[in-house]
Amino acid sequence: MSSPRVDEPKLAFEYDVLAGRWSWSTGLRALHGLSVDDVPTTEIMLDRMVEEHRDEMLARFQKHLATPGPYTCVYELRDPHGRLRRVRYVGYAEAYQGQVTRLFGFVLDLTDMLREYANEAVHGAMEHRAAIEQAKGALMLSFGIDDEAAFDLLRTYSSRSNLKLSVVAARITEGLSDPRYSSLDPGRNLLNILAAFGPAAAEPADAATG
Image (cartoon, rainbow, N blue to C red; front, side, top):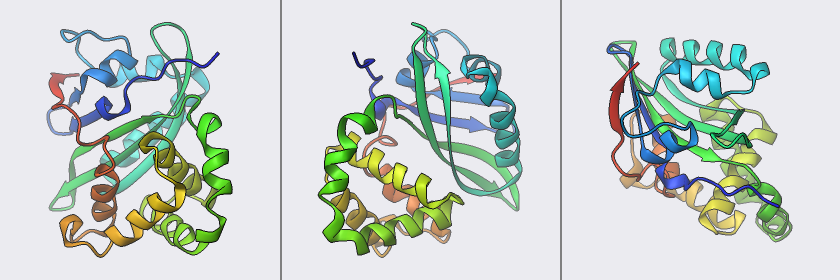
């Protein structure tokens, strides 16, 4: 039996580097077992992670605090009911005069998602391989991920938006030249395109210090 997924459009986050303050949307709070009055912190995030992922994710978090640009990572955590969940963070490290001042983005709950939907989407997409390869290339270049991770990200968006894989790929490639998503930073541009699929258009995150 599949575990129920937390509503992905509500899984938004922001981290004020100078203040050391996380802002999590209601959905992301629920995923970590926090109420509206609880304070989200890095320690809570690490505590929810499976132990074997903590050191790597803490190192990556520290790297993002020092390295401007887009990023994405996957890890597993235990939700408040003890269910094992696989999530992907898609974010951007924003800098001012070379110093990272803010992390922001959204989280995709991958639990059961690919198994439920991906096979059909992938099998129907072979005729659109060129667009898919182009979109994968953009993701690989912007987020510094390999071919498999880029394809995993495409399939995730295909599943959660209920769009064919080829449509998602086409929207990404078309969006790269769309002025609505324009940015001086190609990575920020791509994040704007991905956000248009839904997750970043979440309810405003509430702020907390931690």
